[in-house]
Length: 215
Image (cartoon, rainbow, N blue to C red; front, side):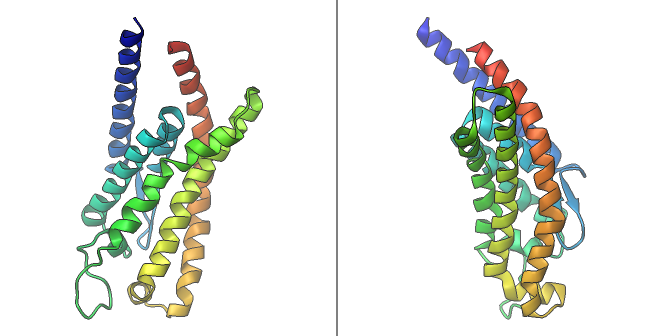
């Protein structure tokens, strides 16, 4: 009986993980997933990753984050922006004498997205409480933390790895590149974090209650 229940939980978790994966790909390849502003793209694809992290744990969350990274890599080719070279190792770097890409683009593309699937779980675990109001606050904080993990790491990795290329792509002085980074963090990152802070607790609270009752 115990083995049967354990297998049932594993099957259910696999089904839920597959559902989150499907949502990630659906969002990523429709206009609402990655909103192209020409220079950079805003996204809501991080939200199902964050929800998956909190409800399924950091291992499955990291897997969902890797799928998020994969969609970024694909989107860099099928729906490019000025900064797509920072998300693909084969897109030519602006201003590069060699004319090729940079393998470190994979770090930008996948590293922060994997952590989006890990940070929210531990943030919620650290802040969670048995009282409903506090639990909702901890879920909201986990959503914001996951979203800002993505924005802050992606933009700072781009700055440190592709500073020269950013200046060339945007036709701005190198000294102005960090101002561009801060502008994206404020213009894209804060609205994305607010969206995560609102939607994550609304969905997670119901999912966590369902999982507790189903055990």
